[in-house]
Length: 277
Image 1 (cartoon, rainbow, N blue to C red):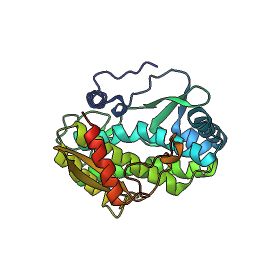
Image 2 (image 1 turned 135 degrees about the vertical axis):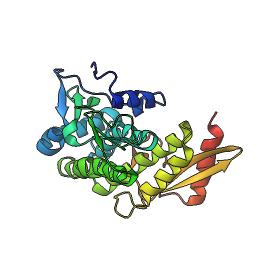
Image 3 (image 1 turned 180 degrees about the horizontal axis):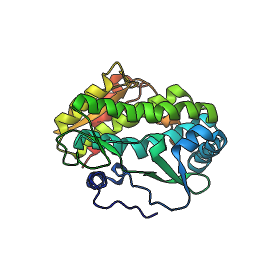
Image 4 (image 1 turned 120 degrees about the vertical axis):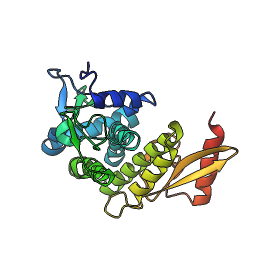
């Protein structure tokens, strides 16, 4: 699956972020390639196909026919492909990618997705951004407007449509799905703190993100800076369960799971710090 748009400012910044890990990249679909399905078609027009793909995730990754676990596996995989590039660009480069369903496409192998791409490299920027004059860039006036655009892309144009579709077509729990969104977003902040030099900005943006009463993420996560044996990490204490522990072989709770008291979370966070090179 060959992708195009070399030298495009968004493509370049995505590739730069991909130096942190491939999950921060989001390629652009090459016109004319076969096997691509629009996200709007999947989530808004084809419940049967969505149900089959979710069930395929359950069987393929978990060996289960349980609809709730299959839906949890699907939403976690879906989230990973979106929140890392979206939040990575917003926090580090002050750009917001257009990940609306009309601009998002998936490549399928008949049962599961094996590729995710943008239809067009559309993005929002601040006036001082070097790409402000690009035809694919929408200029917003200030940081507050850029944050509003982030919420629109993340919630109104994507997850706010995807999660009801998963509930309708595949029996997914909306609450568990939103918990998974919060957990995935927190993971991005954790890794951005770990991997970049923008630690103060990462913490500021995470605090604003989870302390916004107008956001579905309001108080879904408490981020905590933990220090131990000369190391530090930016960990998430979560207010809801995403059921990820049920898809693990040993049924182990996530370190910041609501099912664990803060004291046990601290022990696990410190163990993670000690295990880091």
